[in-house]
Length: 446
Image 1 (cartoon, rainbow, N blue to C red):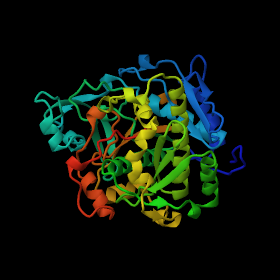
Image 2 (cartoon, rainbow, N blue to C red):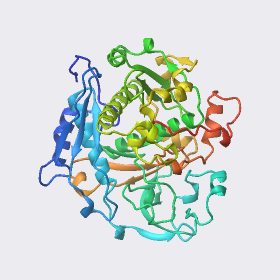
Image 3 (cartoon, one colour):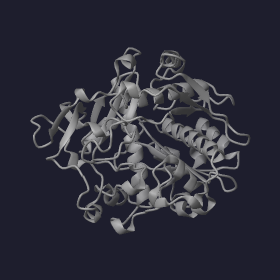
Image 4 (tube, one colour):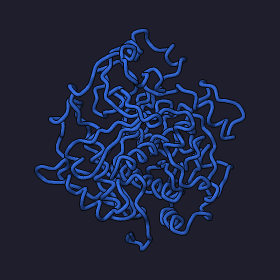
């Protein structure tokens, strides 16, 4: 397909299918002013002087009557460098959010992990707080133990293929955080749509890996290799040139971890306007598509932030970093130019690499990369019947030991071993970082 500037692009790997035009027609079934999952789609205007991107947000009624979960904000959207791919991404995002929120309590089984006689995910094996953090918590903090009753839903162990019980609070976005003892705060990581189960699992696992990489390298303030733009394939180079032609500075970081899956972090800097900092990340089996996906994501986030900033009178000085619990506050914090120095470890990195070096493990199978490394990974099919009838599946992917993204600063997760181990294994640090030395500046991930 070709975008408005005559640059041929492909749909990002997170798009539900490869044939964007036919997908758009099929996925559009979810849109109806009166009966659809969404009632319409609105284009996000690109202000003058900003790079061109096709970006849309959905309009929908509240689907709370169809779920026992909590009400959720109506903020789904998608973006790409072509209209068709952007619509596919937007519809896909709406479908993911819908399926990830709709459930009935009577479909769950209730038991403690200790009492289950079938394979189940140990809730205490899920990375969240470190021992130091736990020791500092109040005695009555309701953290989940193996003897606590939980609601469970059936999933599949992607390594052994065995049916496995998964805590419902790790699966559904709308699951009330106070309904069960705490494992993790609800977040969309690993929720993905696809034209078949394999594609949805791939897309969900890619998101888990990109966010693990982002948090691991951000919290450890690890200087990553910058991909030399002169070595990029012509199509990708033209996209980069389109962005930087508008006075923006773009840094593409090779954020590949020990799994050998191509992961890139895109950092967009504006030294004269707001927002100052915008970031995005992408992972997948094809290096070119990974970079294209990160570019569209970072522009979508910048565009969304521009519109948020234009509709608020608040300033970054009014934000208490320790109390951040929304994208709006996080974006406002990083909109200020005096925050820029706190990201020097990435944008001023002395490490460099080439596209060919970044793409050395192209066509990596993500499930194989994760499971052969000894990590458990699970998939829960959350596809509703109406979405299944459209030929779309939605899977929730959970990899308990990966470093999780958090969006609520009072619920920062410093547990697990990846913060200490991965930067050393990748050759970026000589010795493991201590918890006291972790980067506590609120991260800029949307």
